[in-house]
Image: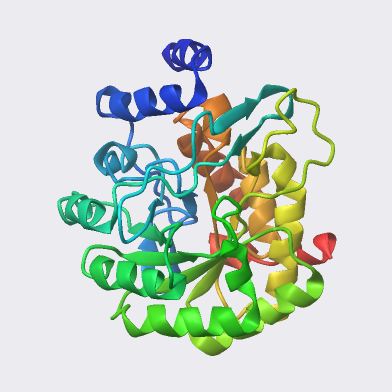
Length: 344
């Protein structure tokens, strides 16, 4: 009841202002802690997760709310994106709710405090679930590949994993780095600075089958530990909101089907040999289960919390546990990829 009232109040405000208020209020929220069960516990790329429901990058850009987020039910948390130097991002307004579509459009443009400040906060975080950092490049950089490596060099002593973000649509020409030659060089530089930190690659949903195959091949060859599928989309198909024409990346419910199709294709291209994290439109335990059956070893969410509240992660993890038990799976890992053919 209290959460519903808080959501109603926040959703009456400008979306970016509401987000900032929600972050500042988190330390005072009654949160139960991560959901744990033998069925949900999993190991991904050396990371021990109490459950496979994670927080996607973008919610806590500057690592200011890690302690309360660790109590929100998530099995792992990703903060950022971080760039070498602080940057303000794109002009406001840059975040839009698409309420009829249960979606959002953002064009933040990697607004963040810079890796030095973010790393200081990460170094002071409490023990709990694994925490990773989404890494990016400054908008005005002359060498974006070098920016990724520079962020990794600073972050490697304070994070449990890192994610190379070449898939945001809000930094001009950033997605060009998904091309095979550029991606190969970029990943080589990041991995040279990663030490023992596992590195994931986050890709866009707006890719052809040939591009997905190419990225999968480069990722496996380069040595990343997994792929996160997917970032936001440039598509506006089927939207009804008055904000549907805003520039930026679309997230939320409309992304569920296209992102899950990319996930399933990646699973087939990699033969299930590379852990995949499914992101895009996860708003229920059924959504999380569908992603897992399509090939995801874990899932992440963000936009759905705008509509369903912070307790959503806890509810999804509990519901997923019940669904796995109902279908006779002893552990979530046993369900990974069991429904991939439904999406191909």
